Amino acid sequence: MAPIVAGAFLLGIWELYVRTRLPDFVATPSGIIMAIPSTVTSASFWSDALASLGSIVEGVAFGTVAGILIGVAMGRVREVNWFLSTYIRALYALPLIALVPIVILWVGYQPAARLTIVVISAFLPVAVTTADGTRAIPKEYLDVGRMFGAKAHHVWFGIALPTALPHIVAGIELGFARGITNAIAVEVLASIQGMGMSVFEKSAQLNENASLVYVLALAIFAVGIRSLMIRARHWLAPWYSG
Amino acid sequence: MTMAARTESFGRRVRRLRAPGAPWIRVACYASSIVLLLGAWQALGRSFGVLFVPFTTTMSRLREMLYDGPLLSALAVSGKLYGVTLGISIVVGVSVGLVLARMKLIAAAIEPYIYVLYATPTISLVPFVSVMFGFEFWSRVLVAVLISIFPILLGTLEGARSIPRQHLDVAAIFGSSEGQLWRDVILPYVTPYAMTGIKQSIALSMVGTLVAEFFLNPDGVAAVLLQGTTTIDSAWVLAVTVLVAAIAVVLVGIGELIERYLVRWRHTAVG
Image (cartoon, rainbow over all chains, first blue to last red; front, side):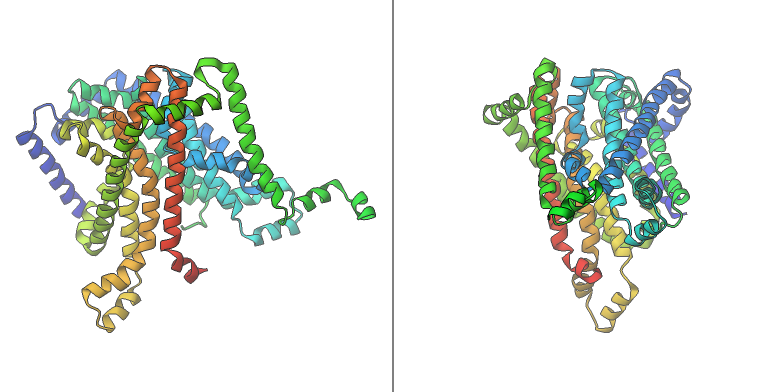
């Protein structure tokens, strides 16, 4: 009950403030609702959504697979960790948005630049969380495995990876969040057609309400991914409650 | 050493060399990885030409840009935005988190919206912010704070909510005043939670600074990066990117040190 009252109150303030103080084209809650049907039924909305969200999902998938493989190797083999950790951790600390200009320069002003950035955005957190998760497996698990004659690949993919699953899911979640942001950044900086580009384009055409319908769609996608990840963690690692 | 060493199997020899007391492997790994990367960068740079310049060219360009280029003043502009953003995120994030933990009704009312705003890619709100508040400094601060504040706010809220009942009861039994309660119970308990958020925000404030600078009329380091992209000057872009990476590593390292210092009692208490 309280959230609904608070929500109505906040929207009311927004609506009133814009109507009394700001020019007509500024978005209002009622204007956004009115703009939803025409925006969502337009063909460009769906082609934008397919381009952006498709490349985000594809990029995160690639980045996750690569991140898990490298991460397990880093977590289980000391030498691999020492060899790679300098770069992986430096890149992980770096705001990836700073990489957007150099990636655009190398890949070109085309959708492949967006995919590249999303792959990197997902790869780094997944690699780091997988490495941390597979390194910190309890000694008892390894002892039991050894007693039953586990080979190296059993330890890697039968013990370490399942133990690290909750960490990996957290890494994928982070990868999605960063991937969405960086995909939008590439679209706007390199003028690649997609949802992020349309948010900025519609706003520049003073079509603020339509611009915010796109923002709303992006927010729904982001929230949806987040709850999907929480569900995935319950399903993949029901024993974990952190 | 003679017989044993000769009959030793390959696997056993590898295991002996990899024994925990063999620090040379670690040094060798770090050294070889750095040498290999720089070597590859240098070699590739020589063969690729314009788009991918060698390491040495990048470094000399970086020095050039620092001494008599736009980089130093751009760093000052970005540094100011970064400092203000981080400061506001810490002060507002911690206080709002504490207030929400004490005022249950307000928290119940607005918490869902905080999470929705947190999940929404802030970068997509940039056009809306610019229409509402313009392109100037405080507009940039707003965008950057929206990106960096949530880990602190939510961390503090979680910490303040998880204070065990007994701690508050003991304080009440000994007749603590409200001020003593905050100073001796609540703040020390919340500090590690807030610090975990602050550590994340130290990195996120950089993201926020760059997003604000890229998308609200280019300014600061982001403007310098974009200038290199439009002139297709890869040495320029690479030099700035490497510098930003170095700054990021230092800032994140400082954050980790502060966290370790502030929550040192927690480790000793638990472990």
